[in-house]
Length: 612
Image (cartoon, rainbow, N blue to C red; front, top):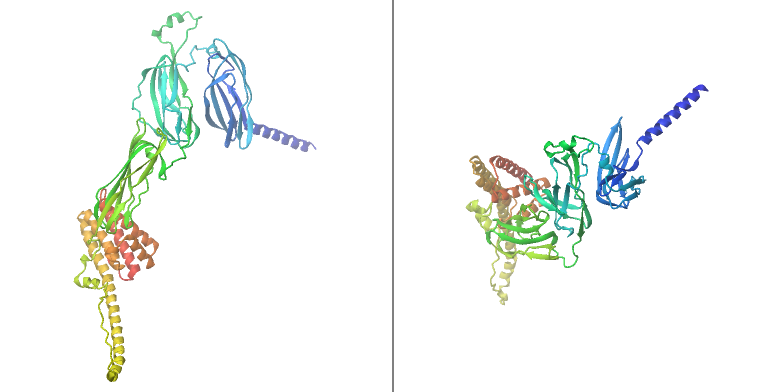
């Protein structure tokens, strides 16, 4: 029985300990203030803190009304984590800086917050506002003047408080001081939630200059400047910018100290240096939605004032030779976010991945230019038009959409008989056979004779018996000869592909060894396309990468090899037309990949021995 009592007692102690331990880390939500009694026109701080083992999933913080007080700043948020004996305790705080609006006793009602679906309510605070000296100064034993809000502060100044979505707001953070400061350090950067931001350029050295503010003379300096582009509508807030800095205080004299009359002379400098946290004001920006009427089809989010121009380097080109098209968007606004309009080319024209460059000025209003450069290759000859490109933007000053266009470009593409891999490298027999690929039908008049002399019936009888048989024999012979001839043409081209590729690749290797890189790429390009032209029996006038891929797919070539053909083709043509930045090492790798690709294609297409 005694043993059972001891067991029950131990369990009770354990439960009490467990409950006490659990309560130690239970979630609590409390309100606190640095002073319960303040003087009139005196700042003080009120903090609401949620503390416990878990401060995740916090939402719906509802502050009290603060009747009798004016909010100078807040709520500023902060969090902290402590680990004691392996147990974690977290705290999340909302802090306000208040100033009384009248004398009397006031109550600050409870605040509420939701954490993981559960609502917590803080305690009520009582604040007494008295006339005259504040409690802070009366309790200041060192005599240090702690109220520096009127002598040191940061102002966040937006150039406008109401803007359209995507329109620039410039926020300037300016430091004002009447006292000596040193060693400023950033404690907390402002949060630009709902904005896309670009820092504006400032001088490397920040200097203080004289400035009048509210009728008083201060030393001031711009310490930060940012361009904000709202990407949401409604009222958006920018949290305070916080700095820590050393402040030099001058001690006040103590009337009971006989030495203060003497040492209060500024020459003796009875001062004290302390670190202070300085916060800027919170900014509210009202963001309007863009108008819904008269929106151009080409509008893609550009806000500001822009101009558009486009140029081509030549209006007459040879087939399979490149030309360059440049589009330039220039102006003031969200230049970096501006997207280029879609370029539509005529059928038979190919373009490569464009080069995009920016030149943005970040002093004051964001402005600059954005240039896109296309390399375009016409695969067919003739006269073509590149239709005008439309670009539109919303001008917030005029409050309307503006659409502008590039001019129409006319391109004359002349037939190019020296296409890479052309028949200029074939011998006379090959040219003769190629000329016989296409046969023409000769038209003419035929005479029909009517036979009225039936006395020749016997001769005509044998004629109609022998002639069809003879015609059938001739036709069969003709068909066999044609098939043989066609086979010879195919075999000639097939074999010529190997010979031609081998010859060009050997020439390319010599050019590579002599460091003639431009001619090297020309030879590799010619070898590769000449091989495909002959191997796939594609006429040179129809030779395009799309047709090559179609032929390879018909012959059940693997997708992996087809992708390699695409990559090699684009790389070869791009380097030929944009040779800047190429070196011998990359050219050597390119040569090896080209040789390997031709070998793999040849094995799959002909099952013959490798050409290299």
